[in-house]
Length: 346
Image 1 (cartoon, rainbow, N blue to C red):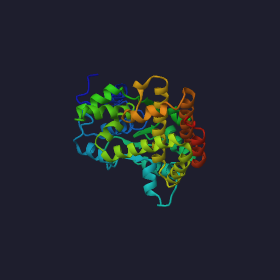
Image 2 (image 1 turned 60 degrees about the vertical axis):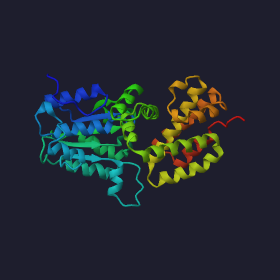
Image 3 (image 1 turned 180 degrees about the vertical axis):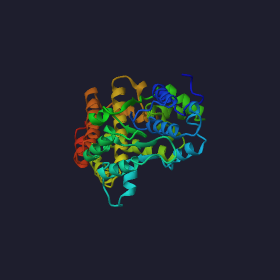
Image 4 (image 1 turned 90 degrees about the horizontal axis):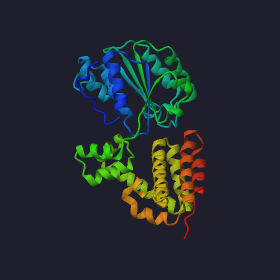
């Protein structure tokens, strides 16, 4: 097979890109793909680019062209044959007071009804299913029915953070595409190519840990960078004083209960990176630290910890993320995290 005439707008992940390109070029399209990897690594970009290629009006080797009406509408989320399911969209469609933290069976039933209709314009009907690890059990059962007997014109693109978080009955019926973080050098180079200053590119490459999509988004979003720095400052203050951190945990719990789960998980992810950096510094591996822009505060904190204490802080924070994914009460999970953190020595 000859190489595609156009390159897909994907940085890295060459193996996954080549597999999908071959599928488009040969017409051998699977009915379901499961794209996994950390948030901000490019999962949605890959899924949307593949969806564009499936509905593109250009000759096969040129898909997705990015300029035809189908590609442009798919990119904007308004193509009639490309649908998206996510927790955010479900929340927007429900009442303002809804506190669902799972994709419901009603959402999947509506999707199945839409997928039963033949394509309006393209050869395929494509459904991008985000937050697959956040499906309710009845929603998984409803999705399984479509995976077992999909209409011949349907392609499902499932997106999840971890393969293991998706039931085996779902995983076994999908082609897995696991995306790995890029190297820091690759992220720095990609950002430099976009005009980002070298010092800023180095910081972004560190704090995003190879998640190229997140790095690009932060490079043009000053507000998001400021929010991230606020999250880092909050996390450092919590680690410095775990007793005062209990008050912060109460605010995080309220935020979680108001439906802003992603915000709390992002703050926990920041805390996880802070404890990981502390562990690396105590172990003498500071060149691998992530949050290089707060290195001055790190070294003071690290001087108050031994290796076991830093490991305990990292473990407790990771367990809190696991607990929330298992639907443990947020107040219980976060309180337990803080009470298990080590107290800094004087």
